[in-house]
Length: 249
Image (cartoon, rainbow, N blue to C red; front, top):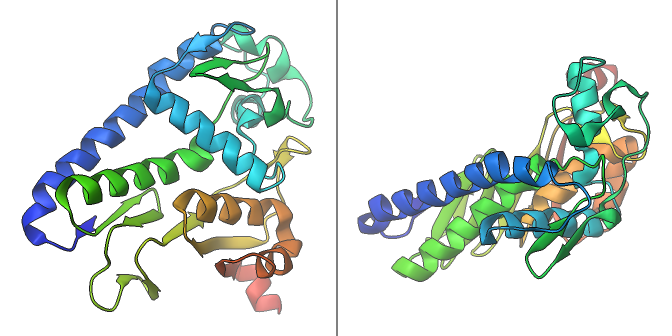
């Protein structure tokens, strides 16, 4: 992370570490408790409610390309037919790949989350982006500085930028802009199977870190159509094809 006033760096780093730790707890123990109560509303902490809201927002912005209900499909890919340890999974892990349940079946109302039986949420596609956003915003407000926070390859900024903008690798970011990065294997929510590997890494520059990350992740789902799709959006996109495809072209 970085701030425009070096004197605030130590306190800002401590705040960011605290917020990141809160997010890890929410995504771990708290979300596990939600999965153990299928079909029943569960009161969430403000942190987890915000992370779930971000995931649903990303799903809406990408037309379902980034869908938090891929959790069971991810477990199936990772563990195959091994016996599930979560009651909410039922026999889903031994079933063949299929479209995921879909984000529209998730109900988040007034801080209470209701998941249908068999739905396992995976918020990894958006959690680091939202957390980085919140950290940068809180640092800028509390200490009156410009802030840049990086979590898991996602970069968020808030407050004034230094002279010439923030420099991240070869990208210059003006104040209030962000970078979203996606390079991992992504599941296609429409099939429940891994998306075709076309891109080695996708980076998107947008005003919001959540938006940038959502679009970068969706690019892997869209594959060869991603470049034209991103060109229609008010973002800057940097797509690196897989080395084998780069050589072939």
